[in-house]
Image (cartoon, rainbow, N blue to C red; front, side, top):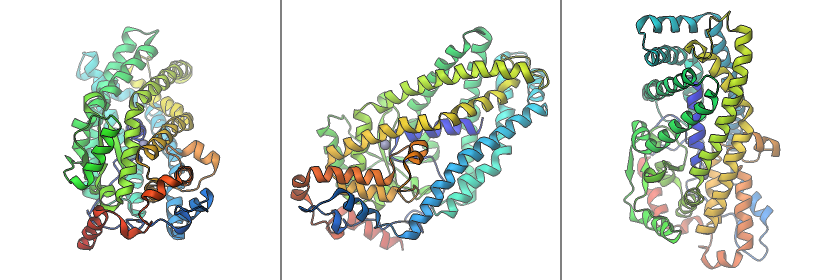
Length: 469
Ligand SMILES: [Zn+2]
């Protein structure tokens, strides 16, 4: 289950943010990564507002700003991610099957039953052994995926020690939250053996909502420091944008994401009273003022369009479908192998590796559905951000910066299956389409399109970088 909650949490984070800012690892603040694009990009001549403005030419001109070797590198990184979906699944499946076939799962259950007669505690003790054992078995893959590979592509900044420390914290959270979920679910299965899949979905959903609610205040600060941003040059335009869009917000938050990664991102997290918009420090340091405005407009789009609540409804439907599949596939597999794996039935905690295996099959099959749902929300937020901020070039620049770890120009099917955000090319094209339809508006405000004419934020961030070198 180490892989599964991580994925669930990752999907949740993806759902709510401008980039999949899953806690990737590393950091020396101020360090310029090898793959980094220039901090502030200029508007290429073909993309400048003129009577001859052409959407395709402007899009191509922006894409041409990315040096060929950097594009090859980010393509390789992103395409490698497709294969990782498969390897994660296969590796996890092998681990589950080994635990079942070798009788490890039954052994962990027997041990838990010897320690206590209290059922919920038995479940938690089983969970404790299971989570620790799978953490160790999956660790080589975790190191490759979260550390070695991230460093190879210049996206990570941590050394192994701090990185491992974060993994350890993850494990502890998993022992607590995963343990609570396991205790609740097995309790449900014991009490309502026929309709457990419906009640189980509701219980899982409730725990998920609880986790989203507490995350900004209790979970994220375990890994990163979140502080109110107090630079008026940055916050005033953002707060003004918020007021103009009827968003009651007094604070903008920043997060020291550079501790782990070079990625630029921002996100909306929590809901109800804990809902907040957070910028990461990579965006603050490397983004132009126009870019930051646009990214904030995008995040406000998520907020105004109620994406958090719609996302929860979507997850509820997906969870009910997943539990229905689980009910059917568990009965089918237990009838065949239950006895040889020494599993007494669905109320027996030893069934857990099988549950995880079947769940991972379901989620693997649902990858395009999940991605397409999230991607369409991201597209909505993009459109909202463009209309609210009127920064098509800021948007194009952000898309290029995000392209440091995403393939810019995928095929159609590729984008449909694997992308949880519109591809960079499609985002730039959308920005240029907006610009083409609003040329008079843009020409009135366009700062002669030169990189040197950005606001104080730009010169300040440039100075900071000079100082850092
Ligand atoms: Zn977003």
